[in-house]
Image 1 (cartoon, rainbow, N blue to C red):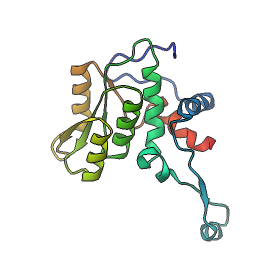
Image 2 (image 1 turned 45 degrees about the horizontal axis):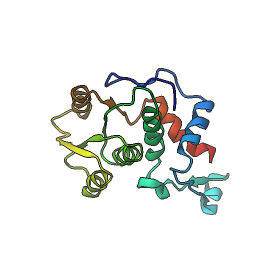
Image 3 (image 1 turned 180 degrees about the vertical axis):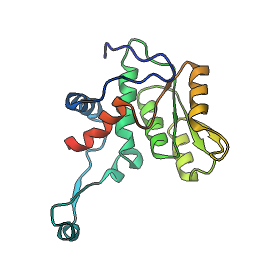
Image 4 (image 1 turned 90 degrees about the vertical axis):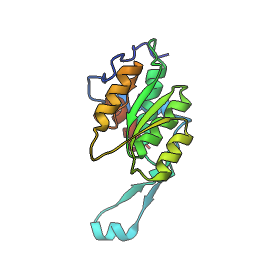
Length: 178
């Protein structure tokens, strides 16, 4: 169990930027949960770029995106703390939504995901199928951040932002270790 207490405020995020040790720790947390995706080389791109071009096939990742890595790292850290949250809240049109929903299920945490009404139906369906409660909003007249922050406050939940969070960044940085 990680002795670091989980943030209790809805908008709390770790203060420091991640370093290489944080990325290595994230890789340890992700081991056995994230797919080790292949690097693909395209010789035509190599010739055009005048160098070697490698593409990490994260479409083969759980949920089809690298976003799972950051979400799982963040939620596994939260789930392993003394002050484990009762719920997590996130906002996304799709990839972060699916990553958080799946990571929450794997870590035994309920998740609420704020998604625009016009999100692709398959993204909403897959997020719901992963076990998340979906809250739809109108992206033209409502703020997803404000809705998510309100829900997090009401439920004493942790808001899992899609970026600007060192745990999310460290988890996504594990792509570089592979």
